[in-house]
View 1 (cartoon, protein in one colour):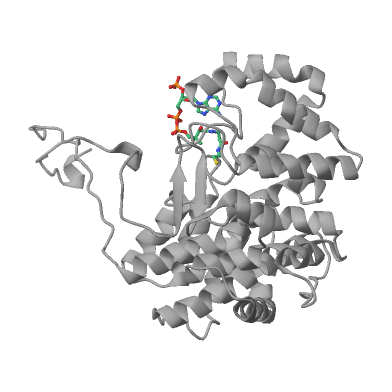
View 2 (cartoon, protein in one colour):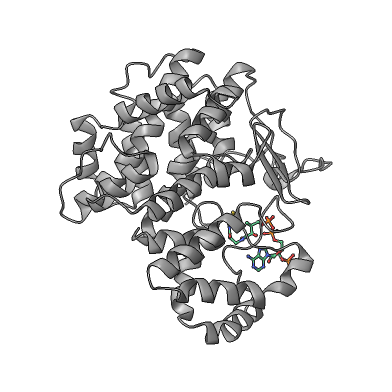
Length: 381
Ligand code: COA
């Protein structure tokens, strides 16, 4: 038996591999800097809205007043789901919300008038429709699985407020709606992370936007990508008291466990998005008479400070879980929240890939046996 002779240099996990050029976002992991289309995430989180960020990511520039109004109207008009898709959600209601979301987006491909049209204009129309429909799927599924009727979208409310309205059946407070609006802005785009990469690979074969978003949702589900906010909140509840943080963290690290909401493939200093979620978690916690969760998180941040020297710092999900919890969002909807926010980024990256497409197809280095003799089944015993 002969083995392949030389081993080429491997890029396992594609760590450090620069795949292509992009105009969508800029990330400097050493400086903790994030720009969407050239605009600093801090300005967008403090001064913009999710609708404006959708426009910015899809069209490459900030909208004029009329352009924003038109996009906003298109989003509000596209929120409702075909009744057949509600039926599909009913059929699969017992599955994890991410599996339901993936299935429902896949089902929407059967009803979208532009599914197979990969032109830029049609892909933009689909991007707007899907961005509007994804929150409706998440909210309708939660209503159905808890034995309640889905709530029809409210065209008077913006994207974030309408999601909370469809989930809970009542209009949220201004603070709650703005906290979610900021969360969506912060999650809107982040380079070729695993899910955006999956979306790019999918359209690189000539497949359409619905197929790409299905790939992206499937990829986001894993705990190393979208699942961290849920894991952080579970950890915070398990700790239960700021006094118990030190013991918990020392014990976890001694056992070689990871502290969720920390560390990042790209950021080696604090993720620039974390500070905005920190502030929202603090303000919401105080307003809602539940400051304990924020205090526990701050204590975890203090106790884990020695990890910073190794480049393991707080990421966006460290505080996001507490914000979702305070907004009354169930834990297994935390990853779908990420998906709702990431929709414009996935769509922008798909459009970018389509404009200058090349099939994404890396190689594997084979290390298995070679030239084995085939023995017929009857002779194998
Ligand atoms: N807590 C404790 N140690 C951590 C850590 C964490 N959250 N994240 C990374 N490390 C340690 C690893 O144990 C490893 O240590 P070692 O070299 O002694 O084995 C080292 O840091 C490098 O980790 P590695 O997994 O190779 O780095 P990566 O760049 O591939 O990891 C993540 C990035 C996100 C997968 C990783 O930091 C992680 O699992 N974080 C927790 C989950 C999370 O919050 N994900 C959301 C990302 S937005």
